[in-house]
Length: 202
Image 1: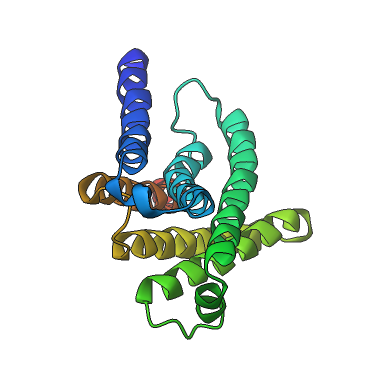
Image 2: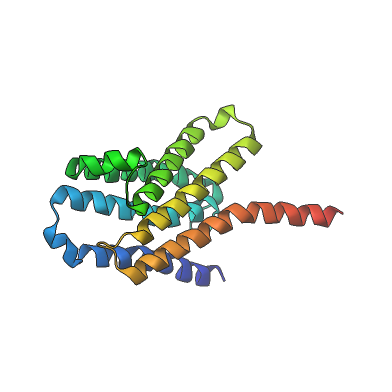
């Protein structure tokens, strides 16, 4: 059973990430883009891929990684995710400062910018909360972290889906759907387990 799980999860995760990256790397839109813009775009795609990986790590659902080790990798990948978003925004700033200023000031006419900015600030807040974790109660940490990362994933998914660019539509939709499903599962599973334990004691 464990072997079957490994054979299903790791190749499935690899396909979910590699396929949209491959389509983006071969997109015809890249021919008209400068290197900085391309780097910024791919940093955003990497961030979207990590939105799928992170809840799987947090839930201990990747075979070969014990729960404790998975959570350590989860923290490391959180740093990579923040870095990817910073590169994404910084690269777009270098290519078009007025657009980024409008987005940050929430006056951009493009809805995808507003969703992206909301996800970005939620991500930074989640990172700050992680840095202050030992000063918070376990309950406050869980509620705060789960709420913020849910906003990050939802905002990031809507941001990506509204953009018509280098990512191929179907593979992007699959990646976004999996990220949403994994996040919902990671958020809901501990609550469901606690609920079952409580019902079992009654």
